[in-house]
Length: 220
Image 1 (cartoon, rainbow, N blue to C red):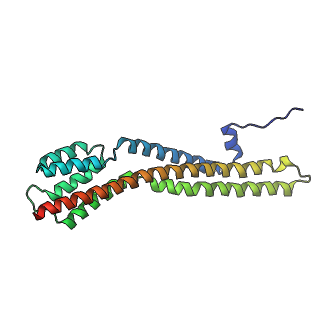
Image 2 (image 1 turned 45 degrees about the vertical axis):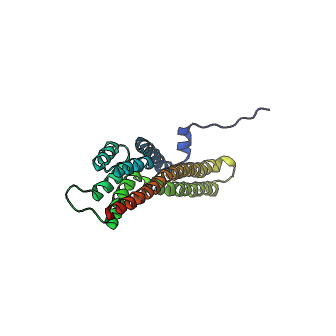
Image 3 (image 1 turned 30 degrees about the vertical axis):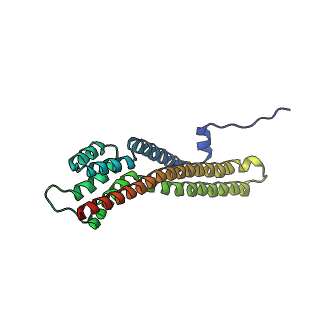
């Protein structure tokens, strides 16, 4: 006895999934585009702050403020931590104006850090939204498919599996695609958030250490 299993191409699955496959297609393209863009963007930037802080502290110990500025300026293109620490050095050792107090230094660092972290988190809200909308849209397709299946049963004089097949296909396919899109979006969001959160913690630690050291030297 021969047994066969039906196999479908993506195009056939898309057609069987019904009208709600169109928004799911849009959501999938958006998710992959955001993830790819964030991979490129985050991959381009460096997030090592400890080495920057050590180099700046060494220059400050040597009373080489110009060297600290020059070093940080050379790193700002690819390392956002350098931008934040450069703001700290510029506010702590201004050329002509009075140096910022410890509280104002903390505020300046927090403001610059918030700006940098905001640029790193671009697209995160969209991933969260798409991760929520995709399964909901899939479930909406499920309801639509089941309505279609029951309508076919109601209109038929004789019920068999083929009558309800299309409705069940629509119900299951949209659910599967919606969940897959949501899972991918959530994985991407979790990984990216971990990278940014670690960077934020490192910046906070390095900034606090440098501000304390600078404040102690200003009091001497």
